Image (cartoon, rainbow, N blue to C red; front, side, top):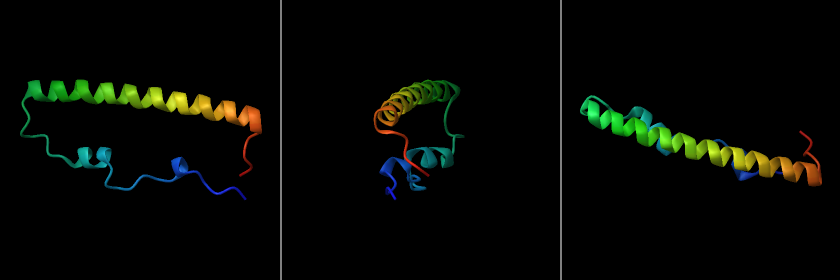
Length: 70
């Protein structure tokens, strides 16, 4: 049996996204919230691009070496 890759393990609960989700937003002005939304949307785009790249890399590896058995 092949051991799981680190990428397949769940992230710890204290990761950045979890911490952001707990933050109180009431002190922020509308302009600050608009800025924050833009930054988070840019981060989402960066994560999606990395996800797509990782998926393509995984597909290429599976095509070359075969898909691992579950």
